[in-house]
Image 1 (cartoon, rainbow, N blue to C red):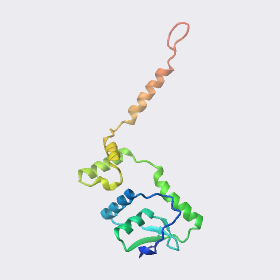
Image 2: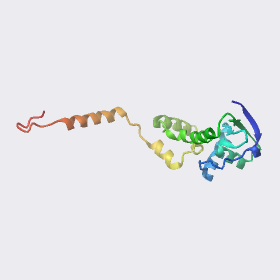
Image 3: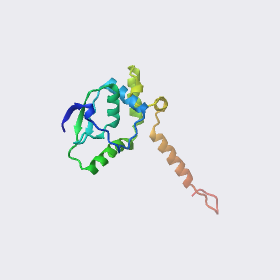
Image 4: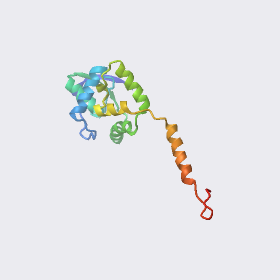
Length: 163
């Protein structure tokens, strides 16, 4: 895989891009690029059409970048380009965070004065994540087992003893 730098005006937006990029998200991407730099090249085909990276492209244009790093995915068929564009966006949305690890990392960043707004969470999400109490999952299962044992107790219809 070869990364090359090209003029941003050589890049063409794919008209069939199904991923929405509202202005608030473009602002988040711009803030991320300002803080961390541009670290994720845009994937384009042999004609310069974006396969993945539309949001980054829009943010870079608004930031006034003249040249950007790209990766040319010339080996993909037209169907694969479409499928990869969809998969690239969807696959990262299929999982959740490990809340305990995320809390630890967010607290570490917060204690060190890092601006958590740069991470893409909205204020309510951050509050919810940081306020979740650590629950011992073993306590949950112990309570569930106790309830199941209580449900299994039956009384003899003749003598009234527990069976």
